[in-house]
Figure 1 (cartoon, rainbow, N blue to C red):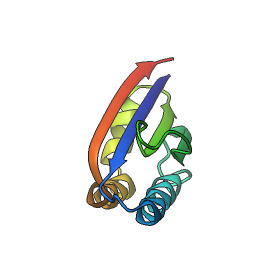
Figure 2: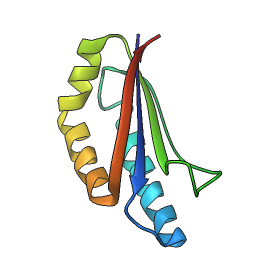
Figure 3: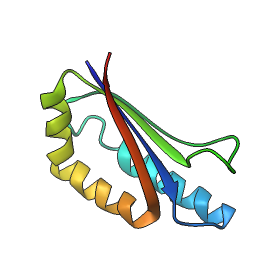
Figure 4: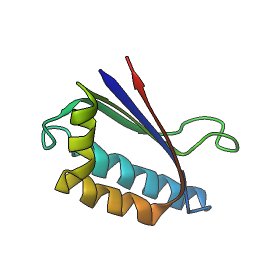
Length: 99
């Protein structure tokens, strides 16, 4: 199984706007469950502690294999959601591990 972990720093600096933007990212990406067949599990959440040093939003997704992750990456619904995410963030970090 492949675990795909992505973290984002939001572009907004105002705490209220950061909350709105984080919720939008959570909504956009969570909606992919049941749409992208290769997703085995997907959790998306906003940071809830240590905002001064933590990243703002994280996604943890599980896929059967690298082919499943690749299918997710190019799925039209993921491409659309990623487009929304890109408008709200300044930085992205990711790692894919075998579990």
